[in-house]
Length: 554
Image (cartoon, rainbow, N blue to C red):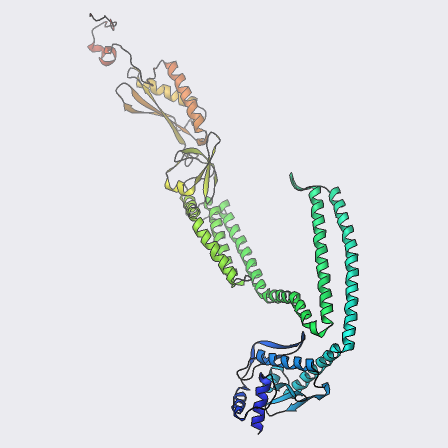
């Protein structure tokens, strides 16, 4: 008989909503509950028993197939029905000891049962936990009965009326206060000065007045809504029927605040890890920078590693260290496991991969060019059809300033795909050879031509005295000989002006020597015997005859 009674008790108090005797065939439930009483543990979350917005206690264990939430809902429904019906007196609340549980009853109504598993999770005995929960139910029932009585409703109505009058008075006071504040803001705005950053005007005095007025209006709306919110909380909490609404309103504000607070507290360990990682990264980057600065100054030397490589190599190493730091810190970032965070990351990666093909090729080309040592800043270079001085070199582009003061921006990928002529590479040590070609007739002695060209080169400002200028005869053409003057200079950035000055001096020196420059080509009729026949083969006293032109008879 006790087995049947225990079976019915647990079936009723677990999730049942109506009291009554259990059928005889329910006895297997007792065996099921007994077999799980020692192994049942807390559910994923504790289930609160809430009556009219007031949390009485939490159910942390299930019974058989019923979860803690099922038990909590069943207890809540029974208590609310008991409060609404007033059929039982508070003095009738008793504790009944059963073999597998302690039952809490109000008259003939079974409210709940406390099991050994419940007491174990609460860290107390079954009898003590049943007594505590019975006292909590008795206090709640007493308050509910008093609040739902005629006297309680009258007191609640009076307090609600008093709260309404207080709200109206506060709103009136706030209206006057914010009106004064609004006027003061307008006056301050009109008298205030314009807000500037150097020559940029951010806010004029009129805009400042409008901004202050907007701020005061927004503050008034916020304070008004806050007062109305507090008023509703007070009024709803005065009546049992609306106390649940008060708890809901309070949860709307306190819930997010509690969640944010819990999130911040739970994130503190990750914040500590991030602080340590950032500190280590900063220290490592500082050491790396000092190391490469030493290489750039020449204090640290490695065979095959040039000082001009120090800065670009430092930038590459710093980038790799920062990427490593991002990878290490990524798991400690807030919300990194959320779907939104992952979606944004994938979106950014796709956009970067689609739009950065050309940029990546330029970056790779910039790195290759750096370690090719094709040119340095300030070098006079020819890149494709552009001749000028290198004024800027980045991972993406190189800027060249021509002799016309025109800056030409060339993508690094284009530089890598074309040939580069560097006029400054060895000019400071061995010297750059300036060369130009003139064509002189066969009648001019080659030694005189050489002397005139060398004299013109020596007159040119910027030409080195040693090594001395020299002449090469590059071709024996049909009508003239090609002479090339070569002169050394260590000023490649002035080569355009030096070429112009050299050509001027060549003209002067040849005019002084009486040598005819055969460029551009022209033709003249003359006797060629004196230039082509040696003197000992010509008749004695030979003189070139004049040319006679006779008209052709018709």
